[in-house]
Image (cartoon, rainbow, N blue to C red; front, top):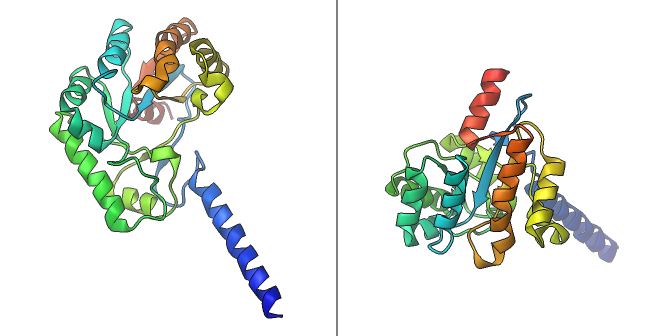
Length: 239
C-alpha cells in the first residue's frame, strides 16, 4: 500500500513540475504582472529586438547596419556584459536605440530566491543607467523563463515582461542561413510583431547577415520599425 502511495506521490510531483516548467516558458502568459509578446494593432509596425551583449566584436557592426537603414531597435543586454563593455552600451544609447534588461548573469530566472531576482535586475538597471541610457527599461527573461517570483518582482518594480512572437533561430533548419532566417520572419510577421534575433556572438554570423535582408524585405512590404516602448505606445494610441 505504501509503495502505491509513493508511486502516486512521485507521479503527482512529476506532473506538477512538468506543468510548472511548461508554464514558465509560455510566451504569452505569466501568473502576475504585465507581459507583452506582440501588440494588437492594424498598422504595419514591428519591433526588432536583440538579446545578449553588448560585445566589443559585433556591437558596432549591428549599429552600422541599423544606421544605414535608419532603423531603431531594442537591445536586451546583460548587466555583466554592459559592465565589461560600457563604451558599446553607451554607443547603443547614443544612437537612439532602446536598452532593456536581460538580467545580470543570464541565468534562468525560475526557482530563484527573491533577493537573487532583485539583485540580477537592479545591478543590470544600474549598469544600463551608467552607460547613459535614460529611457524606460523593460525586462526580458533569459531563455524566456519566468514563473512566480520573477513576475511578482517585476510587477512590484513597475516593469513589463517583454517576450516575442517571432524567433527564427529556434529552428535549426532556419538558423542555418540568413536567407532562411529572413524567409521565416516574412512568413510569420504581422502588425505588432516583436522579432527576436541574437547577433552579438561569433556563432550568430548568419543572424547578423540576415539583418540587412530582413530590414529590406520588411520595408518593401510596408512595415515600419519601432522600439518596444514605441510599439506599445503606438498600440495604446490606436486602441
